[in-house]
Image (cartoon, rainbow over all chains, first blue to last red; front, side, top):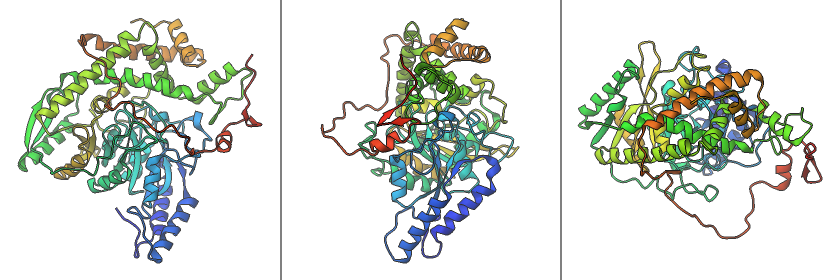
Length: 456
Length: 95
């Protein structure tokens, strides 16, 4: 990526990014542009460079921030009405680490409200358009971040991935998107969706850029007790021989052109001497059902904090406290938020807990075991990210199950906590990007990103 | 399974939502479809399987019992509310 130095100023990089952001305004990528602050920060970096002072590894690099990361620069809305007006006094650890290295946030990006969705159509501010076809969805939930990178507005963007929210929009827009091992990057200061699967990650234009960002932001954080001890940079020698492809995904549920793209990448790996092995993971067909029990349960719990009392939107129509809660939540959440909260309360309610939540938690064990078994047979797994390329705006918005099915190949990684890197794999005949995901065992993050170069 | 109108209203109450008639109708249909979809787990044999609630594999991370400086002050946090008086958040009548 382009970093500010004696020949290219940070101010130039930041102004170019802001210009492009405005030029592409009709794509609805940003919920907020950080113009004045970004230019001021760029000038400060330029002053340091001129004075020969030390600058960070990301000096003057413009980036886009998914609008569910807290920082005092602009409102953090999570694209939800209920958080409108909320300017955070605290800064997310990931954001702080990026800023310490000199990266400059030029804008906050659109998402499905509270990251609930696979198309960015569930945003209170309207959908983001696909970078390759304005009649199609950006993917989601991190749609704005993906399109900001795909249209070359910024060098990188942050995302969160609870069930595919980085990998799927990355694949819909032809860029790299990484969901690290669960616990690799601190989630402090990130709006919580499902605490047992939420991961912070990035969108980039190359594996090398991804590696730099991971190296900077990963690591244990005393403010997030679910961060793993530092391991990212402690990579061992690359000794990859076998790549697995999942037999259970090779059927007509998956678009022909995506299956063809997978085959081509397998041929490329074979030609480089890697062994391609077909593996069976029969429990993965249940992953989506498991996901849509466990995640709504955690969503219902995490989103119970939004009551209109302490921050964000408060309904002014209420005469009692009880009414204040219900009016604020009824007006403040999007339909998909309501669906997930209600499903969560259903699977957790007495009478249904054993049949749904406990059953899903047991099924999750089987999925974890299936990945363990797979990684005893192969080093990495290569699969499609989603069964279809970007679909048309409005095509699935009124059919939640059709929308959920787009996540069928991405959610199991989050349930198992393993890392996955979405990589570009050409386009369909109609010119839509195809993405594949490279999946590795826990804590293989750095080697996985390095190995992605073999697929270029 | 069958999802009745009163089930939807009960779930709305558990969720602190007041739904319009139109929402009861559409959410009711959506929730029924979703519940039918997730019910396919019935077919999966999970006898004698222990549940997994988290994939972090670490337990009880202890910290020293000392008061640390917080990232946000009381003033900053109170400034976020719509209605504050004398360091208190004002809400409509409770009783």
